[in-house]
Every structure is written in structure tokens, then in C-alpha cells.
Length: 93
Image 1 (tube, one colour):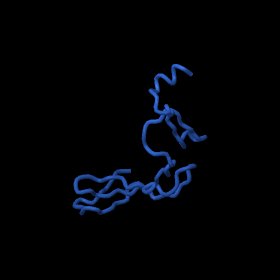
Image 2: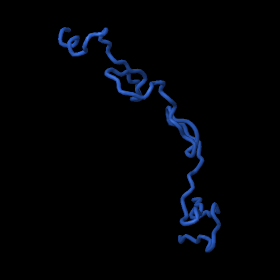
Image 3: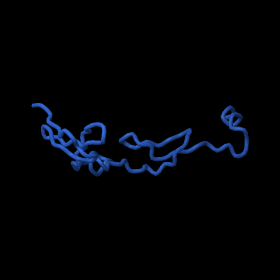
Image 4: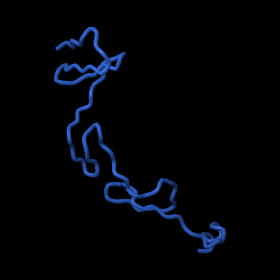
């Protein structure tokens, strides 16, 4: 089935073609994401507003991490040298 978009659309105007919604950006027709609600484990919301919840771990580099069953890092630590050079501690242990 051919697409029959309006000839002189205004910015933000929507058109439904083959059961899909498109919106005119001023230079092109773009597919409008469906706002279908879903549940995909840790993800919640709609397609347009989906956000992955924070794991609670501060962004950074860690020497040791804890990973949950879904593969998300849930904790991280760095070894403490007690004020001594870390290389010496590792060599002696």
C-alpha cells in the first residue's frame, strides 16, 4: 500500500500510514514511537519514557565488583593498602 502524506504539512503534524503514525519535522516524516506499556524485568514504563533504574553504584573504576543475576553491577570496592604502596602489599601476600 503506498504512502500518501499531506502535500504541505505543518511542523508537528501527524499522519497515519499503514497503521503507523508519522510526524512532520519540517524536513522529513519520522515514525512516532508507540507509547505501549511493557514490563521487561528491570525496565518499566512506556517505550517513549523507558528508563533503567539506578543500580546504586557510583560511576567509576573498581578493582572488585559484585554482579547480580541480570548482569548489573550492584557494588564495587578498591583494595586498601593501609598507607603502604599497593604493589608491595600484593607482592608480600
